[in-house]
Length: 311
Image 1 (cartoon, helix red, strand yellow):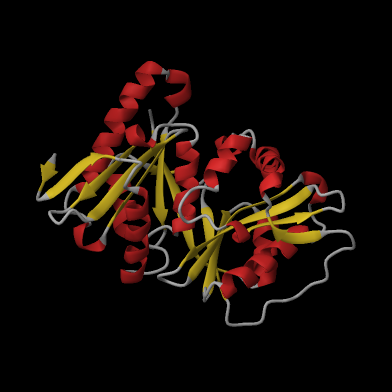
Image 2: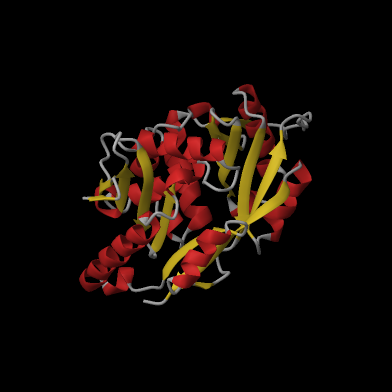
């Protein structure tokens, strides 16, 4: 289908993922650090769709007459809706078309499985993206606040502290044979949320996505080889900005400085990849995480606001 010279179709997992990553990096270069998600944030969200749903049914992509990708939209569980459009194509009708597609798709899903898809539709935007927030309000969304986040930024120009590691512990990249324990950490930290529904095979699939770099999957381990805390790290080589997330620690190893060590090692590694600054986000109400990030040098620069539309 083509509207105003822009073609739309279902996502194709054989060719579209790298184009989405390129689109997000170019969009960031042409706007600012917060108008588009970091490719790491997108990859994690895509992974959470991929392991539970078929992205070919739950994603749409738009191309111009030169077959350049200019927009995409995603419908995820809970249910959640997200979309992004390159600056020169914003507010030309793609946004309304994307929301219409998502709501029509959601109506069908609710008929099939009302329990799984019956909740309010969740979407959101950065607090400084006034046109996006206005669009949501105009289409029946209201501010929720339950999943609002602070967006934080740190410059890598300053020296990164080199703190001592407790005797017997290690802080290093994840090894292939540790994948089952890494998936177990994800389940322990995040369940009962959807983000905690990660099997061993699921995590292996994450490591095969473009954009995943093995030595940026950083863990701290006890003397028994148990993963105590972890940080996933992602780089945007076009804009020289890294992203940290998700970050987590098993409950019995929290407040022992182990997540801090993993974060600092992650910063060193991203700096070695040429990153000049790093972003991280956490829930507005997550005071322990925010205090930890601020103690390392992160500063709040934006907020992500979540909105809902009743079923």
